[in-house]
Length: 115
Image 1: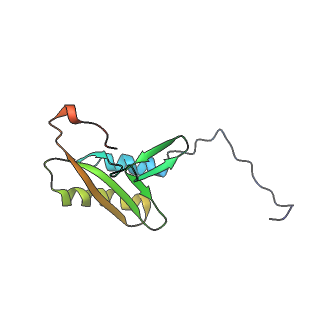
Image 2: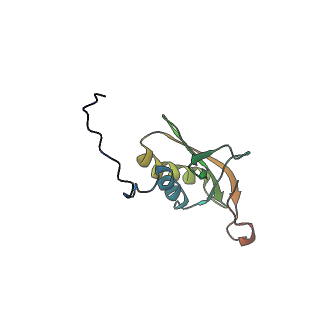
Image 3: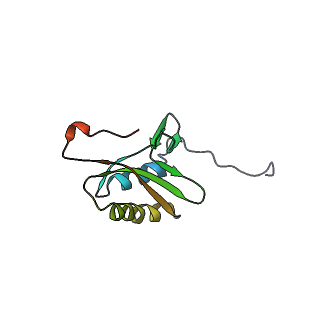
């Protein structure tokens, strides 16, 4: 960059809007048949953001991984297809959906966010 180039100052008061991973998480959780996002066996599926992490979603440069807990009973293939259909337009790349666990929504005492 030349020393004469003018670099606009960033307006720190401007709201950058939601992080893309938050938009993806909302789309996934809004899909019929999805009970929760799931971080994988050891919590390894996550997106790390300043001061927090979003379990169950990893957006890479060429694909997006989404790990979920599905509601039971469900057509698991249809749930995975619905998640993929909602997320692919948001990320513009292939989405790989893994169903890590099943949860019976009728048992409210078990309703919790998976690791």
